[in-house]
View (cartoon, helix red, strand yellow):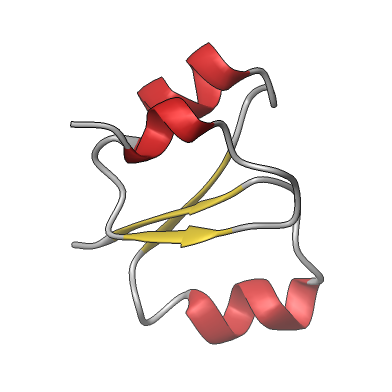
Length: 58
């Protein structure tokens, strides 16, 4: 099952729409280290906050 990571909680209708696409996870914090760790195995990232450059390296 795909992992969908969102930087922030989504509207309930958006959450329902994504239910069939994978398992939705909300980032536990927005600092670069946490986002990089939590997004490293995500198939889809929904961005509602700036992402750290480290996320795109290697």
